[in-house]
Length: 128
Length: 506
Image (cartoon, rainbow over the protein chains, first blue to last red):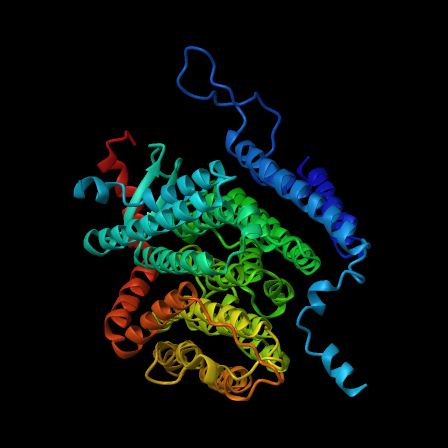
């Protein structure tokens, strides 16, 4: 079972890294989304994945039953999903704003930061 | 009252900036009120951090279990000497930045939410320094990331949006690596509390998962801290931000990554085994050399200083690479000195921009005649960064280089000395171009630098001078902090003893 998950995670991570290497900003963003989703799965598998009862304390008892799932990885993943969602939402807004400002979604054409205070352009202007 | 303050000392450096951020957000349409609330909040944070340092110095490591859950199940907050000192020095820097902001920020930038974001950043920074839980550390990293993204795009210029994309993608990648490492670590050990991990990990059998987790921690923190092969996001984005934002980032953000590196690789993983040590040494040397070479070609003050952040991180990592008590003490000293000096240089860059209207050194000039006070105030942090005695940078460099020669890593010491020489070159370049030479413009109109800018620069210069002329107390403190940091038993005992004090059933 774990092996199936391992292959699934590996495939997802591979796709994520592939997209991350793209020049298209939206693809990069999707790559980040895939990577963080794969990471959440990784925590599940690392935390010991078994078919069991949900980790809910039955009425009248003080503790989880012996066969209940480990609730901690679930809590970790919930936190990670919430944080990841916020960051991806911000990044998507950033990409949209950058596209509107610079008129391109390709990193090769988004060079405004590099052009700011560059040591090279002025030299060219001076020599030419 | 004093007892109450000591009891809750760990709580206030987090609660005050959080409350200030909320208050500033509530006062959204009243920038003037926000400014006041910001200054009061930063002042109170500094006071609270001093109380915390005092508590740590008198009573040893401070521990609190937030929510009252006993360790290792709850989230512990821990302050030892190192983390308390980091909180104090970042609070000092934040207050200086708050004062600088009164003179530097434009109305539009205040309207864009500078104050809530800035205080939010301080919550994240202080939280990262004080937490004793590895997953909680990840959460603080994300708090820092989202607020820094807001701060970097404060003006929403094209360059800032472009820089922010690069910053966002590489830092998101770093936190994803961090989270993966945490997942793997949890899978092997079944715990996330750092003190509990320090107990469990030495007993655990070496496995592939542990080695991979350690490497991922190193990579994740390395991206955050700006190590040699992973620093590219830093010079691509820092120079685009507003200068006060750059100063705070330069002082604090990379240092949080370095702090996390020190915490994880002294408490959880030994630097000695697993081949981490030669790797860190390689990173340290590369970071020093390539940072300073990158700076040599630049003409923009902010870009020169951005590359120097990277170069200086190498010196701090040198301490971790050697990992003797002497080297760790040197690294602690270096971090404290570096936060003050580096942020101060960015503040001076802001003042240069105010006076000459440009960050480009080729267009600036004549500042020595027009504002000699600023020239002196630049010279102190610049010479300190280059390590000229008797300023603080000399003692910091002396400690790490001395440790590297004693710790069988003479080649690292040699690299450090060579890089120090090139640092002098960069600093004298700024000095000659901006201060010494006459202004290249025919009708040079030099504006005066307001007192609100000069005061924080002078205050940080005073700290540099005090450390420089009287290094003994800080050296002694660094040794104490390094000894506590290297002594895992003390950390574990402090975290687990708290349970009895709190009266919670184990």
